[in-house]
Image (cartoon, rainbow, N blue to C red; front, side, top):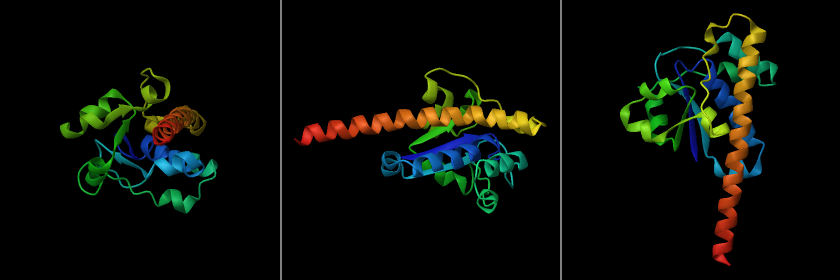
Length: 169
C-alpha cells in the first residue's frame, strides 16, 4: 500500500503526517509488511521548506532535526505528480483538499478524520497559529487520528491475512 498525505502547502499538516505515520509503520511488523511507502504533498501552494513550528514539534517528538529539515515540500505538479499517480490512497485534511486535486485523483481521495473515526471533522490548517503550545495541541490532534487510522489499517491487514490463510488450508 502506498499512502500520500496532502494539505494545502505541504509545510505543516501533511509533512507531520508523513513523518509520524512513517514512524508508526516502521515500528509495527504488520504495518511495515503491508505499507510500501508514506509520502506527502501540497495541492494548492508551492512552498520551499517545512514550517518552523512543524520542525519544532517534530524534533520535540524525537525526530532528528536534519531529517526533519530534509523535507522538501512537493506539489501536485512537477515532482509531486508521480506521488499522486503512484499512491493507492490520497489522504486529505479537509473536504476542500479534494477540490484542489486534479479530477483524475478524486477516486483515491479520503479524509483523515473519516478514516480514523468514521465521521468528518475538518483538520484546520495550523499555519496561522502563532503560539507554539497551541500549534503543538493541533498537531497532537492529528497524531491521535494517525494512531487510530494505523490501528484500523492493522486490523484490516490481519483480517485479510486470516482470510488468505483460511482459503489456503
